[in-house]
Image (cartoon, rainbow, N blue to C red; front, side):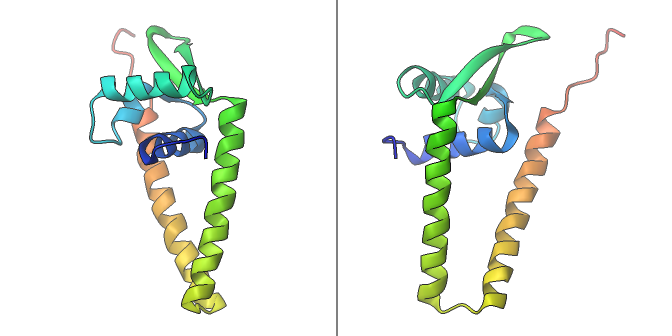
Length: 130
């Protein structure tokens, strides 16, 4: 899909779950430097039209990254393919409806855990000048 690397797809999914993220927040979740993430984000923006970068309202030095309309469409197709693959795997494994629910619950719990981590990293730092 759109000739995305696994790394790029993971970045898009991370942004999708949060609506908008700072590049530094994205970098916190990958074993790479913020400059490498920034380079990937530029590629996703300029070459693939999948993300938008905008200055943060309160700090011009900070760039917020969100999905473009095209990025949302691409991710919808990726998610649809993931759902289809999940269904194929559960059928191939012969899982019962209760087992499928248990697997889905475990996956949702893992996603929720990482969403909470992201939310904690996104909290604004207290203003020490007040």
